[in-house]
Amino acid sequence: MQNNNNIEWLKLIGEKLKDDGTIWISGTYHNIFSIGQLLQELDFKILNVITWEKNNPPPNFSCRFFTHSAELIIWARKKEKVPHYYNYELMKQLNGDKQMKDVWKLPAIAR
Figure (cartoon, rainbow, N blue to C red):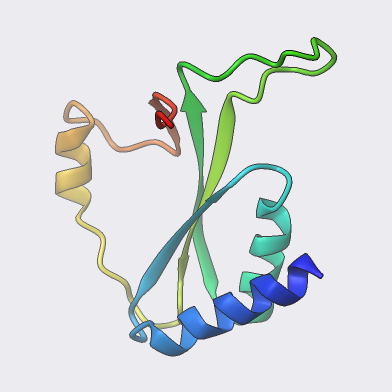
């Protein structure tokens, strides 16, 4: 059932986005792979998958799994062949004058 809900909101976004529009979707392994599949089925172009490494992840209290310290962020464009806007120079400036990488080390968002 989750896929039905996801396909509905992704279709709505596709209807509202301009042809050169992009979308950022964050998620964990629980849902991000199905979202990526649906985006491709809806003819979005996946531009990057960014790994958000949380430098302060919450602990795993069960002590039976690795601590979930990362989320994936899909950056996708509405149309395959329509160019999107990307400010390379600004991204480089924000990253200490180095090209921005696809792993971002940031704190987890507080509750």
